[in-house]
Picture 1 (cartoon, helix red, strand yellow):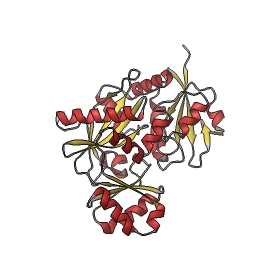
Picture 2: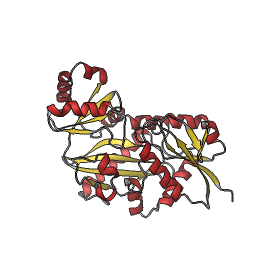
Picture 3: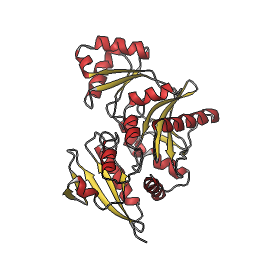
Picture 4: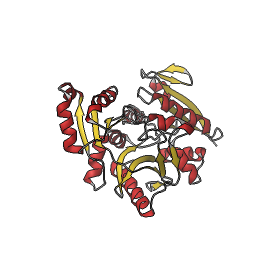
Length: 325
């Protein structure tokens, strides 16, 4: 039987470049060499492509592949642009399509969709760099009007892995938080801080167009007040990740329903991870990750393992789903 030619695409120009490389290496390590001919395709921070270590054009890197296994996160890799490029070349790829990827990456746009369809989302304010130049006084008023009194969460509008995210306990700390977010992009979100249990809903399509929720994962930061970058990627020193989440059955059921609804509303495919805060007895949808982290310490593979799906098996499922589309 002929082996499928699989290109693992990783890296990219995003702020999550290093995390993407970790995901890519995990893919390469766990792909079944008896079933696949594997090609490692790396994209540098300057958007330069290489195939198996040799500098090539994107067209050359993709030539002869049967499917692309996407290990990218963040801008370019997760926002629909790479997906559009692959569709232009007629190459099947893992994960969601162009529109769902773009919506998932844009927290403001996706929350508008979720809210319009009855899902709970945090109260949110949006502002841009130009407004900040006019002084923080009007920004504070805008945040208070939308999000109420502090504490607030300040974050870039379209970044993942909690880069540029700050918890602001007082208005005096707003300036530093805004500067931290502006290092990554010109569009900033402020949202109400919801005290509760952070839970993620991993979603997988083992059969076509039948997404199912894998076991919920509860996230308990050890040192930080929220699930920040250090808590995510510090291994045993990072956040405690508990599978299944220790929340009441009724709330767990509502959380799963909210995660599946978010997945369907954006038109996702293959797999995704929906991040939720369970607060005030409700699941508040924070964001949807169309290419969730798949490093050895990531939430999605941990949940899959808890449901009896080994890492290599999970990759087989993602590839089979890509080839069906």
